[in-house]
Image (tube, rainbow, N blue to C red; front, side, top):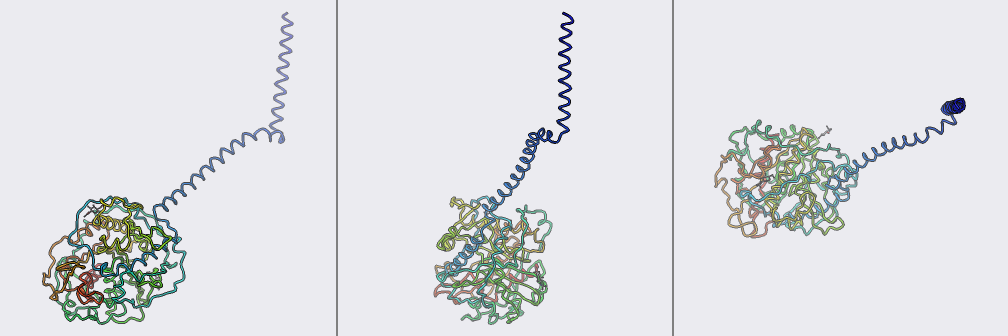
Length: 540
Ligand SMILES: *[C@@H]1O[C@H](CO)[C@@H](O)[C@H](O)[C@H]1NC(C)=O
Ligand SMILES: *[C@@H]1O[C@H](CO)[C@@H](O)[C@H](O)[C@H]1NC(C)=O
């Protein structure tokens, strides 16, 4: 039994041994043979590769998706807009422009000295987008068929036409060479310390004095730039005492303006006015001051470089740009009455309302700010229901219609826009270190015994009848002053000093004003806006 058991065990053991040897030999042969080896790892490798590729692809996919999402979200927030839309936007803006020219439009306005404090809407901030919207638009440059004559062809009649003579076709095409990528940058926090440290002197405080060295140019001249409707020397007006006044700041030294000093300081530089018709007055005033009102055939109209060309059938372009080759200096003006972005709601038709994006800067500014060394902004007199309605502007906030109209009254909407544009410009300053930005305060109206449309007048011809001095420190335009406080945008505070100049308006002598209606909003040139430019110049 024992032997039998042993015999079994021996045979079993030998089977096991043989089995082991065979297995070892097989295993060795397997691993050493190329043909056989090819079978072993295949599955494992496939799995491994799949995992690896899966990871790699997954990673890539994620990246791609993230980028796409960003692009889409940028697009939806209004940064990336198709060039076509933008073209149309501007086309409509041009089209609408006629509206602002009417007497109703131009004379109407909120009274600056009565800032209302009402319920405000929080600025979402989402709409004041950084300047990313360049690329595609700039590439669609082109044919500029019409280059307007260097003399802005304007008459009172055109201004009077009140938008009937609207453009059929706008050629708002940006010049390719002006394109430039601008880094994306979010709003900068307001730098309170910077402002408290640097206490600029207050040019708004001071007094008016008679000075025979004024005016700085003749109102009978400067025909190259001065609109006849604002050249009171060309009207029936006979009193010109108002031309002889000079502003004397109380606490600051005011540098004497000369055209050559200005041009020298602005060598290789560009100064841009962006605002309403009062901004345009300041622009014309500066052109006359710089040239002394003399003809300058060497000065070039370079409006086309900024898309500022008069469309066929349009009353005028959206602005003007002039280049002084002698010093490589450009001075331009762009019409943006509200300082916010205006965009047609239905781009397929010209008969559409326009979205007035309260929290988004004008497309023109976003596109060209990188070209500017000095920027002077203003808004004010278009913030009333009548103007919004006649321009067919519908208020938008955060990219959507502001349905809560009761909470955004006109004063609130204006405040939101002014703060938004200031914050946006302030956020751009670090990107363009040479840029000096100013926000001009409101130009006061002087309608006595009525308003612009109810027989209001400004008949006084005696300068400074109501006083000649401004002695208070606070701005008479607290909304505008408040908006720039704590930012690096400077305040060009002209409200109080201009309030003393009720005799300086166009008054009854406007070419455009219909009988019984006076223009107590715009100023005679030469006149008060020259002083605004002197105060600007001394800060450059
Ligand atoms: C204007 O808006 C700012 C910022 O939202 C706010 O702090 C300020 O109180 C508002 N001012 C007025 C006069 O409504
Ligand atoms: C004119 O000024 C611009 C900057 O505004 C500069 O890029 C350009 O090179 C200047 N041109 C000349 C001829 O100096």
